[in-house]
Length: 200
Image 1: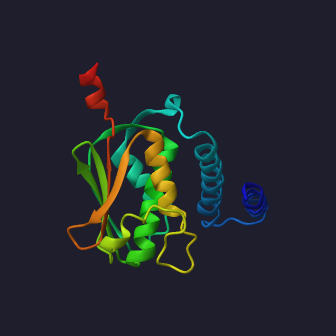
Image 2 (image 1 turned 135 degrees about the vertical axis):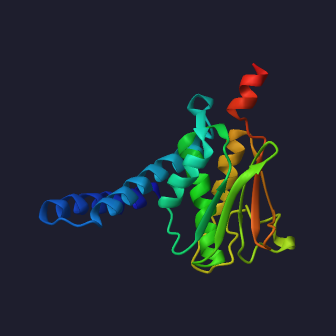
Image 3 (image 1 turned 45 degrees about the vertical axis):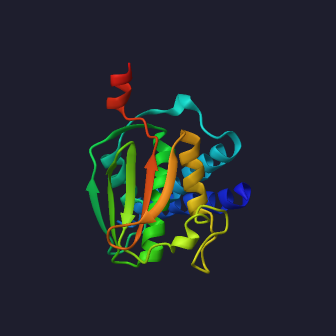
């Protein structure tokens, strides 16, 4: 699967370089950035699958800045983002980005183009909530399993990968109903820089 995905992405990357030499377009840089991000995600997914998590990759990460960066890499249409956090987390930056991008993509896919997504703080962690249709109570226990999806075009791996990344960090992730009736993913057991300094 890795080989099959990497080849067309490499071809796209090469074609973009050729296009750059032949024309000047504002669309080329975003397209190249997206291809590079996809290749990076592919490599990181393989690393998570093969090795889990390496504590040596953990560093202080500004959650608000990471959320903003991830939002620009996600097809969000007319969706609205609210950032209500000022935490600095101890995390693997690349894998935290993948976790957030998967949650954002899930919110837009199931909540519609105008969904509102909020990232905020909770004791011991953070949450990602939306005002979409939510996940039925009787399906929340299986939402993170491989193959779970309410969309016929989805693979059902998005939330599974989110859980694996959380678990690799030693975090817990649960889904509950948001204040607006949508889905709210709560990530807890997160070490913050402030808490780490206090413990030291």
